[in-house]
Image 1 (cartoon, rainbow, N blue to C red):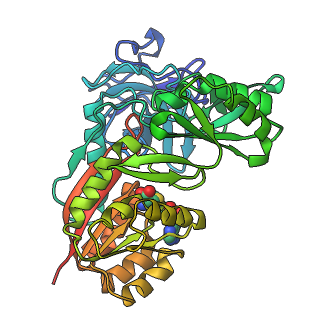
Image 2 (cartoon, rainbow, N blue to C red):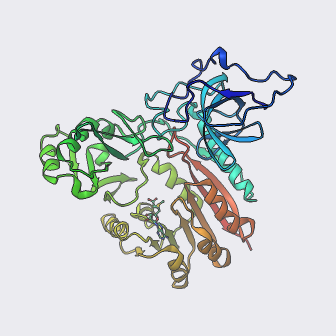
Image 3 (cartoon, rainbow, N blue to C red):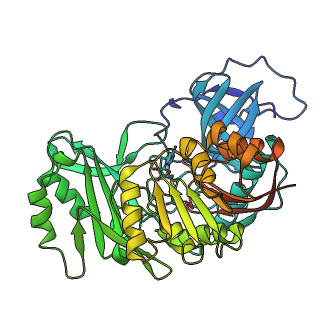
Length: 467
Ligand SMILES: C[S@@+](CC[C@H](N)C(=O)[O-])C[C@H]1O[C@@H](n2cnc3c(N)ncnc32)[C@H](O)[C@@H]1O
């Protein structure tokens, strides 16, 4: 679309300014109504710069929740839009040849546009998709995944979508920045980073955090005001025991007085507790001890959907030797060990591995769960060499498992591999090695939404070795 543009009065490059408008809020101001009528000869456009306003038609969405658009030979990434919409944007900053911009008016709204319920949308960097109806959010996640794997030359069956029944209040863990006020910690608040910024926004509630965490914010704010000392940066909160217990950790640990935590914990309402060392989460009738510094699936209520897809993709594990690579605190392994002959967990984080061993004992599967505390890159071949592998679960961090692990799997991997990934781009890169130029075929793809209202997405891919 050819877009006419001008420097909009007051349209600064600070993306923390006005919120992306919802449908109906987006009427353009008359003096900015400069979009080109089809057939009108082009006036020579002013060079693009921060603050320039343009009217553009949005194309697809990319990972990150931004819509692709083009204008005057430039590529734009639009914050706050929906594919297919015509929107007025203000350019905010440029990275290479791509301009980032935010919606300041909606010309032609998508039928999927909704009013974002959170008052901090547009300021807070936490949610990118609140302006989109939930069914369309799910479709967009599926399209982004398909686009990434197809670009990598990987043939996949139609992905199954697993959304949340209630796409709100699902985070069982939160990290709140401590924001000193005019009087330092004495009037500090708690909040999050602004989008693409280190600046913070204070919040009184967060609609994607578990009620027991969001409801405790006033008390937690009091805690950091009374017990914090200079340098206190983050309060890390996990909802354990079905939400009755909050596991607290400060960063740095020494910057929050333990005596104040204890004093306030002693006066909590009946039924509420604070812990500073461990808490317990439950899944499929089993209990798992959790420390503040080990990874957990923060959308604990959607855990069954995610791990259910992994278990289904792994197939029959009865009497088999399974490797759970990047195993964390051993939640999935404890359930797999109910049927498998042995589950070997490879995990490089010592504290997570210690928690995993404890969880295996608590769940009475310690005789069938073995932890190898080492990087997957160095341990996998050795584990496979000492007893074989019938099935492998790979659940790496965002960076994916990388060339060394994927390369070894392509040469000598087991008959069944299940990849769990939170990043379509690194998943597609790893699948390229395993499938497009390797011996595996994709049997199933499940897109599991663990993070509604945000661009984040988990994908479970079942692979079988051919020939
Ligand atoms: C995405 S988490 C998955 C954890 C677990 N599968 C779960 O669902 O809770 C990745 C885990 O891999 C561990 N990790 C990161 N890099 C690793 C590596 N190179 N080798 C082994 N473990 C690693 C992290 O400590 C973390 O526990």
